[in-house]
Amino acid sequence: MAQCKPFKAIAFDLDGTLIDSVPDLAAATNATLAELNLTGCSEEQVRSWVGNGAHVLIERALIFALGEAVEAQRLEAAMPIFMKHYEAHLQRHSKLYDGVINVLEQLHSMGYQLAVVTNKPYRFTIPLLDAFGIGHLFTQVLGGDSLDKMKPDPLPLNHLLQQWQLDKTELLMVGDSKNDILAAKAAGISSIGLTYGYNYGEDIGLSGPTAVCDTFSEVLAHINDSQKVMEQ
Ligand SMILES: O=C(O)COP(=O)(O)O
Image (cartoon, rainbow, N blue to C red):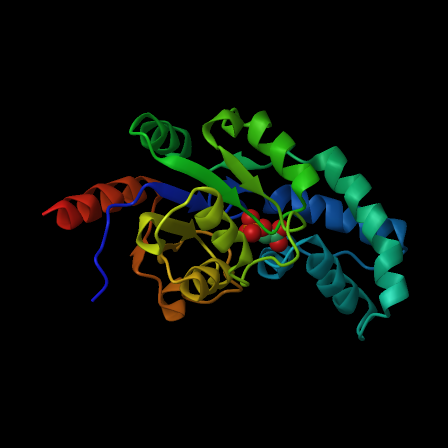
């Protein structure tokens, strides 16, 4: 078995992990559909469409509203409309999940390198983190369009391993979606799956994370316990 080293760095997913962003994503999606004279959708539907970036979210919304597959040209025309509305909504109704600030501040002061690895477009990620007063805690922030591929591809996590010169056992991924867990598995690193976020209505445990937590505060307890075991 590979020699396990204690974690040095932690990569966090954003939507459904740190921030409940669906209310604003749903408002922006509905404003987009309204501008295109199409039927609106529910917040619950948007909750099940989030996870693969803005492009896929709007593709899913258009397929729902049109009742058929959407042509590439139509999708491309809808994207700037969505981007405009999401920029205006960004943090109007979104909320940090319980325990997020406290746990991130503790991990930061314990000396962990922290990153955000999200499929959300980069241009929205930094303003959102700053609006909630947590941007300064992260030394790396990767959006869905920062690199050539997004989660579930391992590229963003491999990028962090390389940037920070870490062994695979030294980086942990924390997220609510199977995209996070599949990316972690493909990169060969440990992961924590959170049960409270958005995962297409599926049990996150089915994706096979290293551990499952029900609250963000449990993540800190889990990391502390794992470090004790590895240091023994
Ligand atoms: O924008 C999305 O689709 C999801 O973003 P996430 O990777 O932070 O969950």
